[in-house]
Amino acid sequence: MREAFGRALVALGEQNERVIVLDGDVCGSTKAVYFKERFPNRFVQAGIAEQNMVGVAAGLAATGLLPYVTTFAVFATKRACEQISVAVAHANTNVRICGGYSGLSSGKAGATHQAIEDIAIMRAMPNMAVFAPGDDAELAQVMEASLTFPGPLYVRVGRNEVPAIFDRCHRFRPGEVYCLRQGGDVALIGTGGSTFVVLEAAELLAAEGIDAAVLHAPSLKPLEAEEIVAAVSATERVITVEDHNVIGGLGDAVASVLAQAHVHARLVKLGMQDTFGESGLEHELREVYGLSPRAVARVGAALCAARGAGMTGAWQI
Amino acid sequence: MTAREGVSGRAVVGVEPESPDTTATTEWKQALSDIAREVRYRALEMIHWAGAGHPGGSLSVIDILVHLYFRAMNVRPETPQWDARDRLILGKGHATAALYAVLSRRGYMHDHVLHQYGEVRGPLQCHPDMHKTPGVDFSTGSLGQALSVAAGMTLAGCLRAARFHVYAVLGDGEMQEGQVWEAMRFTAERSLSRLICIVDYNGYQQSRATPEALPLERLAKQVEAFGWEVAVINGHNFEELEEGIAWARRTKDQPRCIIARTVKGKGVSFMEGDLSWHVRHPTHAELMVARQELLGQRH
Image (cartoon, rainbow over the protein chains, first blue to last red):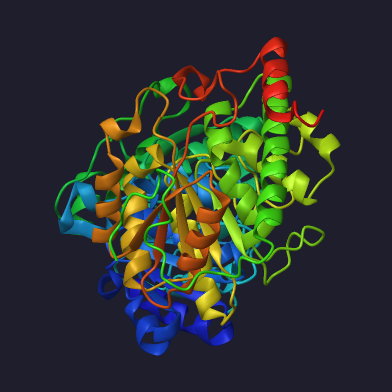
């Protein structure tokens, strides 16, 4: 996804001369380097100093430019958390925070480099929008939307290639939840790089005769209720999948939507079960932490098999 | 150039030989001095009404702000968002009583508005909010962030070929924040010379004397080591402020920082040097004594 990200930045730079890209000395990794090569005068190498980088971006935004802060998601959202809260969210400046190597995608770098709290942190900030595109095509559309989106936003960008999900007809709109597959037995909801996992899980379930609906939520904030409520009202079973802590991420956002809409359903939140990650390739980590297609399908099948009162308490992966 | 002490009544140190136009010297200085006394009383009045605010650090920075808004900065109070204006970010955001009293006196808002200091849903937050108060160029409150934002504004000016200056007014305690030093390094690396940093060195933070953490001489050396030029001036002397700011504006490459020696609680005898006035709020009786000291000769 990082290749698409680098290309998207260049496309934005070509469209709008107010676009400035700031980098925290990881542009070779995030691929912001493509922008640096194309627009050296609009590229700011802020160095290994994320707090200052966010402040500088806020100053640029307050003076009529459109800054994109690019670094790893862990450093953007945690090292510079208060700077984002004060100088971006509270000041309501048009800064775009782009968190690369999100979730488990940073792989072997291990726990310190795996952003598994970023959705929770950024969703909690007033004024802040949070987007996690599901594939390269959608990432390009999210970036395109960021040119005109009013106010600050956070984009979660995975490191690794993900299979294409969307064709040219797809249109990203902030807040929208997309139904990728109809199904009446269980609703699977994914976000970011986890949606393709969910689609594969649905295929595995179909082979077992289980009809899974698949929803994709690229916009974690705002998050519209309609599609979620419609799908889950029908299935009464829902599984959320994210490479993020189950506290404060997609699962909690969906739970909140369902509770507020009085939808009665059994919810299983798959994600990091309040634990840090470790070194390993993304697909290995997905196996270990129960976030692979097979693991999701297993939970889906068990959920559908357990009729009524059979399941209580926390779901064991 | 090295930082030297210019506080004991000597001429400003660190200022280059050619000095700015000082015609009608006494008149403008007297005018600023009168404004500053008035603004000091206004600020204390606001803090008294609100039962909130920071008198000590407001009084120490007032001469700096008065000089900037009435003498140095190119601003249009009737058009606060004028794009070509000079900009000011108050890093020590707790000194809003000083900032609002100065902005009001400068014509950004009617002085009736000052009654709403700290009022719920009011326009005057106890830390600056750029979306609520005309003339506030950026929201602050969390110490350490202003210099970075000022660097961003200055960089935007460079990228847009605009010629405005950006003033970052920081507290001396604030210099303990790591982000300040990230911003110092960034500004010097990029030669953002239109950014002028002024440190209100009043010698006290909330719980101790600042020199315990960072003596002025070491602070000056530290700033220089980060690639800036430094001048130390008396922050209550308008002539030294005039020369210091003119010096800071003359650079084309290395950014310049003015360390302004000030007195916490300046202008009110019983507040000067008394650490308790960092956050204490004057009673009506105390306010009246301060009024007599500040405005007595004219009212």
